[in-house]
Length: 294
Image (tube, rainbow, N blue to C red; front, side):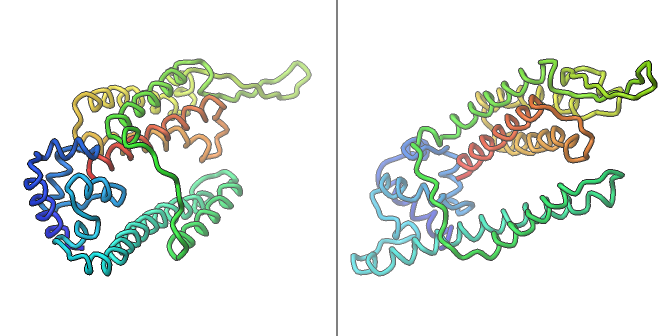
């Protein structure tokens, strides 16, 4: 596949149909910037967009992939091979990215006991499991998973950005409740025995911060920043801001998980729900950024 050749072909067909970049973008649920990137050869349409793009331009998927008109015989000979090549390329790239991320997470978890004065056998087992999954992701040759088809409206960047705001709003509300941050205390009873008791606080309380559990407050402050910026992104979308939001959200997820990963026993069910909300926000951001850049 030649991105530049396909881009010139898309530009030619769009003008032939009398469409502007914005009109073509609206028909297939992407931004006009995405169409501009395709036509200049700086990007290539996502596999899921090839069929609606071909229909909008009055051509076939095989002709889009080859970047030139084909005869009926050539279409029959090349359509299957071109589509398979595209799908294989996407699947290979997805496996490689997943393998690298899983391998990094697995190595970090395996090395945790070397840097922390805590016993973390469960983390070591999880790390080993992640390395196994990384190896399988890198070398697995089976068919791609079928995740089903969603409507184009649900996959639009604006819908995903709205989902980001909702998830971050849920995380913020949970962080305001006095049940997210946890502190464990030791207390000596009258008979000389030492007992333990647990207190819960809001993520914005300074009490856990004073006991060296910095992560709830850092997560809460970062959530407020993310919520504000995601509202800005919802009404005035910018590609760079979307990428920055995704990175900041991942940092927030890591901050929220650090008490658990470090074996500090500073975690609660509300804390787990906050982490899940931040994770869903990251997924929505990734979808929005991918669709905008598609």
